[in-house]
Structure formats: C-alpha cells, structure tokens
Figure 1: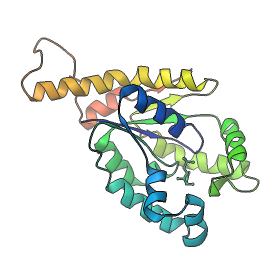
Figure 2: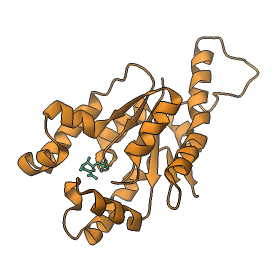
Figure 3: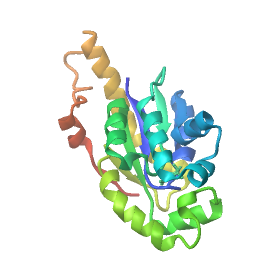
Length: 207
Ligand code: S3P
C-alpha cells in the first residue's frame, strides 16, 4: 500500500494541503509534528527550548521509524525530517514522497506571521535562506517536486492531486498484478516501485 508523504521547507503548506488531500482521497491524515507533540506531551517549541534540537531530531527519527499507518494515509512531515538520510529511507519505503516548493519570500512572510517555529525566531530571513539552500539537495531526492508559488490553496491541492493520482492508481494496479487479477494487456501499474521507477518519474512541476 502506498502512502502519500509530504515534505518541504517550513511553511510551504504541507499540513494545510495534506489535510485536505487526505479528506478528498478518504485517507487518514498523519502529521509527524503532531505525533511528536502528543507522544512527548509538549509543543515542538517546548521540546526545542527545554531539550534542544538534537533531542527533537532523535524523537523525530523514532516517530518516523515507527510509522505504520493501518490504512492508506497522507503523512505530513516537519521541514527538517527529510534532511535526515534514515528518515528519507524510511519515508521512501512508505510510498510516494512529494516535496512542496515555495519561494523564500513566501516562506519568510508566512513564518513571521505564525510565530510557532523555533528555527524562525528573530530576524530570520538570512538564516532561513541559508537553511533552505542547505536542505535543497535533500528535498530534491523526493519522488516529485511541486512548486506552489502564486497558487491558491485550492490550486496547490489540484496540482498535487494531478501529479500523484496516477501514481497512487498504479499502486492499485501493481497490487492487482501481484494477485494475478490485473489486466495483462494494460500498461497500468508498469511503472513499478523500484529505484529505477522512482527515478523515471521524478520531475519538477511549475505553476
Ligand atoms: C522544522 C520544521 C517544523 C518543525 C520543527 C523543525 C524544521 O515543521 O518540525 O519546528 O527543521 O524545518 P514545519 O515544517 O511544519 O514548520
């Protein structure tokens, strides 16, 4: 079963978009930051402030390693989750990883309005730009990169759905093939799930 995993920098809209897509696809929605907060009975900010970022990252890795959704899910991750190689591997095994991409201007504007992100405290523009640059290489390892700059929430959702629905459908066809119930004349599901297949579908979508 392929889950849909959303990654990308802070404030690109992973949670807002993920929740709505989950509802539309009739899937469960899992937000790894919320799982961490529930597990630790603390906000992300409190964890950073009282226990430090390395401890937050350790908990984050444990939570990612323990993700075993019962049914098909949409999983939204924190902005730093996919930067960790072990998390990338674990998430890659769970399904299709979509990275949402937005300009740094949009990000700075959004995080300064929000106030809940410890890594964005103070005069954050330069720091966030540097962090975004550093993380880009990791984000590029997602299966699909989707730019949402200039799009409304609704348009962003439509773009993500358009990109991922064939992949989620091909998963169903793969399962049917494996069970011997697939249509042998059909190409559906032939994209496979191996690393080669992943590489072949990776592309960047612009608005
Ligand atoms: C972080 C992003 C946050 C949260 C934590 C660390 C990061 O999640 O996990 O504050 O390292 O970029 P969002 O991407 O949902 O803001």
